[in-house]
Image 1: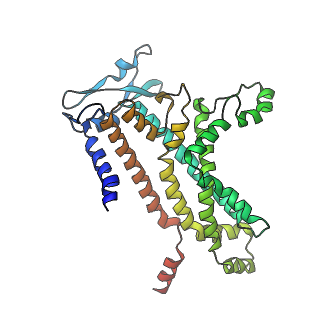
Image 2: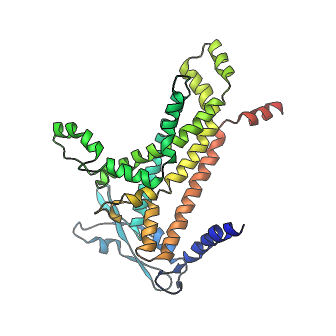
Image 3: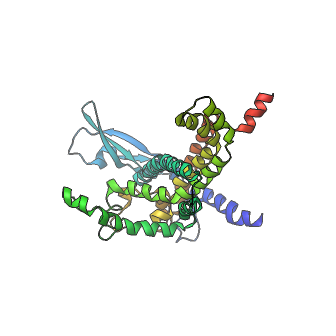
Length: 338
């Protein structure tokens, strides 16, 4: 209890307190803000402005926003779009937060479903009674026991522009089409796919083991009865395997979603020169930079709490949806008995 209080409850409470303060870690103590909600207002400051003159500077188009206490929030261009022939600028008080959040959410949207589908396919293969299956199960689980830092450094080497194994293997393809070797982690268009590939390799092991355990718990009698009724492989998979495996899929979905929205180590060890906040970074890495490089501990705490609320909301939505697709055999039996 003492350890939980000292190392968990106290830091959480302190970060919430600091999110309403102006705290530079080089100062002696946090300073009060005349507007206690200023940190949150800066993050949520969003504005859409019509650009009447194409030559007009964005600083004049977007302007500033005054808050209580005399502080102002300057809007920075986040995006530009056209609507009915007119040009509009989307501005934000902290464009880096929204860029980082968008990068992180896209990573989660792609990596989580792909990770689940890939792990399910591998689990189905490893569920076969063939010779040497134990060796393959161990091999696929290996990435789960490796430290995240080691995985990041391994993939950083694999994706290296000049001597990386991936670019070396694709050299014939590059030469045939006259393409120069890409920088996977420096090219804005390739950074997200590179991180997704790296993330999939890291989560396959744990996901596969959990799904394999779920497959072992499916009664063989269900498949035998379905075969007698003339059901094919696809029908068995859709009507038996997926429903009986849904609790394991649900568990993997929740844990993978939370992990994807909290990526930190991969970005910490893969930060090539030239990559800035303009290019989009994982939100947890942005929070770290804000706190320990820019020394804005109070503002970083506000960023952290908003990210936490996003994770909680998305997790709740997944839980609310589970009643429509997760099948619990014991619960259904109780309902039938009642």
